Image (cartoon, rainbow, N blue to C red; front, side, top):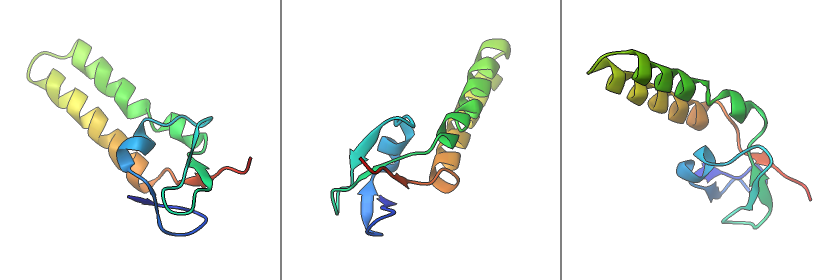
Length: 89
């Protein structure tokens, strides 16, 4: 679970954060205030695009390695670089 910027308790899962866009906000599971991701989350998807390009251009088994590396890098960026941001409405 990722930490809420308001109450510092668990707010959402990493999987939920990975599928969120910068315009979307969800209520924190602990305090109910709305949280989301900033616009930098869009740039975090670049490794996924590179992984897809590697999967298309490279021969096996490197195409699978490229796709997995792109997805793994995206998840790592979401976990350690992209913050959970408060959304005031």
